[in-house]
Image (cartoon, rainbow, N blue to C red):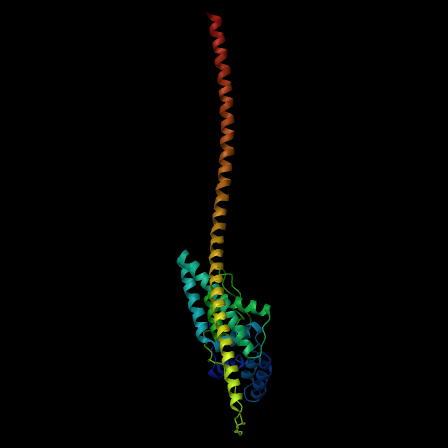
Length: 302
């Protein structure tokens, strides 16, 4: 990524506001700013006009960065540890961090989906795949992590973990490189104004029935909560087992590859040994013939 361009604070503030909007509101809000600016500062207005609307997956990540800053910091901290383990070639730590990476990206992708839904945005399976790929890129690539943290992505990211991520046009403008957006936690919905109404006349029997109904619903809720906790534990156990089995499979595949290589080497040695054995057998036969001829010659001289 190139060095960030010089930019005034008003452009950064505007970018932060625009990229916090819902996708459907972005273009109209940007163009309204451009219209208001044209007569006063045409050059600045053209820079605002050049701001691109983010793709849905990029918007979802930007939205989550503003809503759940603490979880994003946890993701980026794990990414830094993962990259350090890779550079140090610490296999055991790398396997542990890789398992954490898979669990965290899957969990955060679900949270991104929930945060978008709370803003009436439904994310398709394809978009969620792009979201998870972007979060994974932030774990594997330092530059991608900075881009995600800026909250100004315009395209989703991908990373192989080997080549650097192409960030040339990933963020709104180079000046947001290293920018930290203003947190915008969810706002509690406004409650309707209450007005006093005269209490209805309730009989003692109706009160008893209401209490019984409440007690029954509380028992039902308690049972449902217990079952939910039990299923959560079961899901957690199965996820852990899945990760362990995947790790064991990876180790078995590596061992199989080693054994196949060894088998090929032994086969080559066997072929060479069999050829040498045939040559030795021919030499023995020739020597026996020469010995028999010498013995015959000796007998004739006696």
